[in-house]
Length: 183
Image (cartoon, rainbow, N blue to C red):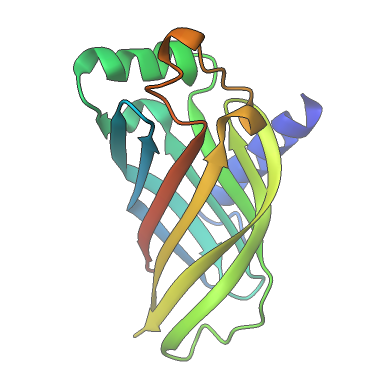
């Protein structure tokens, strides 16, 4: 619990303007995150265009967060309600975040395409998991476009699948992230 609180404090401090000192910091307020659950009886897909993030190109530190209630799509309003109330418990756990550091040494001042590994803490449903997530970056004219695909196991974040819906909800969720970072 203490680790979760410290991680959240770091992520919030990271997202406050000026929290990185004088280093060049890029940010986004409108990244997109999409998830899909491809189970035997149902495909569930939802997305949010409210992904927020900051990236210090000198220290290679990053933090991204999304409000769980901002996800839309789903197959029905009732499905969205169940997602927020029964699975993600968005009143108790209102956001998910990923914060950490880029492993590779990249000169982010030079235009180009790069595949990087982001090592950090993924916080979902109040549970922190250390992850290394591959991402593709395109640096052009001082902007960075990020795209990433990865999976999240529900069991890793203590998200139960009731037996009554185990054929409708996958235990492994596919996640896609896209964001443009600018000064």
